[in-house]
Length: 524
Ligand code: ADP
Image (cartoon, rainbow, N blue to C red; front, top):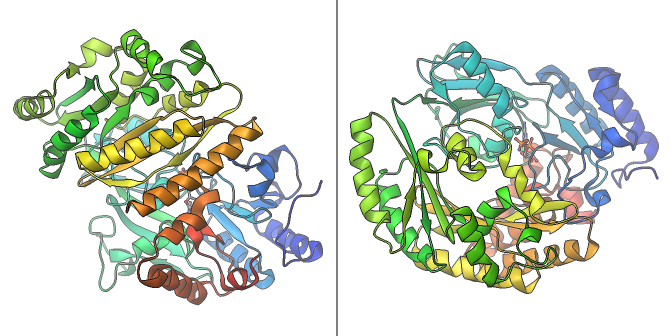
């Protein structure tokens, strides 16, 4: 069956445009026939069938000039382009476009590490640079710098930052740590943000602002431009590193943990991206549901105790780390121990206690910026084609809110036949609560239930005043609809910006519920 095409184009127009793009990038860098190469751009974790988000073609330029030429062709024919950097945004859509038939603009060939500066601690990278690549480069050069990576190390530094991804070291808020962007607008204009727009600047990667409005944010989670370079701050290697884990036995301990963590984070005593991880998240890294219960049903409470005992886990497992000279870490640790150890049943673990345990080992790596792929084990929790979409509401770092979100999600998840597999990524003042809705993709009924559950969760979270920080393609419109204060003033502004910057609607239609005018009006 031929793949879907943009609905407003005839096949002749579409393939003519693709031919012209082929002439720009070379024939080996365009895919336009249905087959394994095109299907590798499907979302392998989608709660829908593959075809719902299957692109019609892929074009992979190797630099800004080629991008500008592609955008010109796209404007001439009105070809919609979905930009990806490494396309590993799994749980949120992977490499796939929001609409079937749109063309993926794959920037994987633009994978140059333009600069790593050891003196100031930063890197300037192109979109296709992955965490593994940047890490290996720094190791090879012997720079005393750490990166901060997403859990799966195959993703790109730039793509993850644009999605507001978070990591595990003190530099865990990636957008907060970015410094300077280069962007191609839909009309081909090339610009640099911040200090980068001053010719001859020495400060593009040193100072996040420029002169006038700060526009970097509008190029994140959006479809207002193609980001072609980005600076990212890197942490100088500290003289000491002390990761630790604390297990807690009872579900309701989440309240006390969260209350204890808030002042430690707000006052920066715990400096890194700390995580309060639920039992089944931990379990899914190293075992399967079938080993503890019915492989097709949520695990009953009775199995939880055995799981905890077998793997020395808690219902909640708190991970964090201290960094710096030893006397400073020792002093800070006393404060952390008094606060988090005061909760009855708290058990502390260090490297000597858990080395060799896969879930400990990968977190110890992540908290010091060593990329790896261990978290992918999670998909083996369920039988069949394990996949997950992540429901990620933001919560205040407050016990009442954490418990409320946890209970709300867990109850609904069980009702729809899924486990609660969740963790709280503790930021400076908020928590990203990530519920990994894990399902068997080969089972149509599970896919349907996963979608239904997700939709219910969006509504219930919004009613309680909680909004998601990121989402899968399938739920972008619905979540955008929840950010509707004052008659949707913010999305109306997004649409005004979209119409002004990209009047032909060629860049990522539908990203985060932002649609070009003709698609809003014609509902295509
Ligand atoms: P990663 O592989 O690092 O997880 P992706 O390459 O999948 O990230 O990108 C995640 C999302 O970010 C994409 O779906 C797209 O919406 C956006 N994006 C990625 N790269 C760019 C870019 N260079 N310019 C604009 N948007 C981008």
